[in-house]
Image: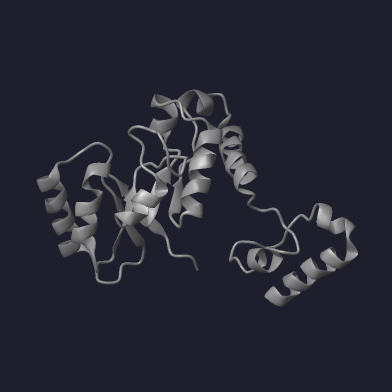
Length: 199
């Protein structure tokens, strides 16, 4: 069974002293081996301080956002490598506030997801609809569109001979739809072998 994740998004709240106090309270009250992975996502300016306070605890550190680009002239942005450098293991991408207030579209969110994952961060992908979408019964359509953008850009779920064993080993993958590889007998048979090896 997969371990659940509970992540706290602190948004634009706190100060150095409030961050230290909250972390101290969390460390005192948290069981030594919690049932869920515990992640806190403080504002960027407090990440290193939070990491220093959380070292060797049950808590992991996450960031609230990441730049889709790896480096360059992007004033005010924070790269995935920088987040790793200050101790982050997770990063939130596609939060509704980023989508709504800063006009981040599905393609940008997908790029952020891919960049974070490529740099060794665990992306926490936020999906969801606005009230108008919910009232118009478009919830499934909106969420499917948001997920499809990530899947298309990141190439997830593209089953082939080269990745079949890895994909079939995942706990929630029960099979796969094989595209071009199904037209080549040797590749299709290799995928079948990978599926059998899972059982």
